Image 1: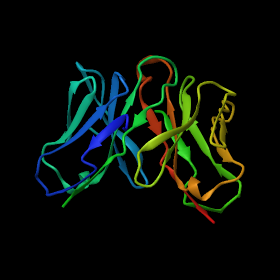
Image 2: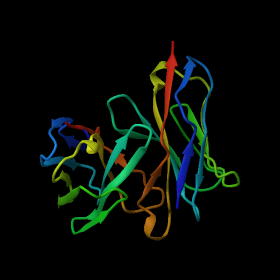
Image 3: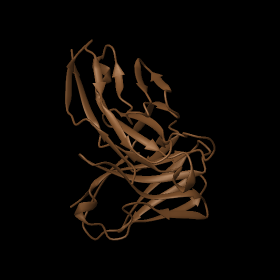
Image 4: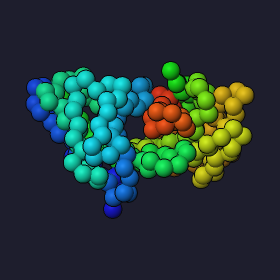
Length: 114
Length: 115
């Protein structure tokens, strides 16, 4: 089983709909992240959470919200989807201890908004 | 702010060719440096990392050396295989202060290896 699981893997929806993307992890990490990937732009950070009571905005948080329901679960919501939110979305986790801790990524959710 | 610049692709090579993907960074202090690989339809996987100057990260035949004097972390492999076809991302994270969580990514380099 994957350490970082994202659901759904693919989603097509219409402008104005509310969408939730879910992420769960079995790595026991405190830190969780949501990124979006667009062609030619690399990955950009949307939100991150250091623990259940800690939520922080990333560089492109407008139009998104998140919920950290438990240490292992971190969901991303689009309250009213718009076409320019069409992208590949990744959840990631990392350990809080030590220098140079890598982030561990899920397989992504491909979201298309018509 | 911090930034990572990597060579633009796509890069197309024949099997067994030598690979170099250039990566340079701008950051204050002493960041940790990473190479991630993304195979088609999958998420990013850590390929290798280095946490201080002159460290060499290596994995699966890939290598990269942390060069502080040139602020570089170039990825190399002596003989590529078709299975190495993927997108490669260079990234950094700061090791101190309030930014020791944030990964700053380059834009990615698509590598295609032909038989």
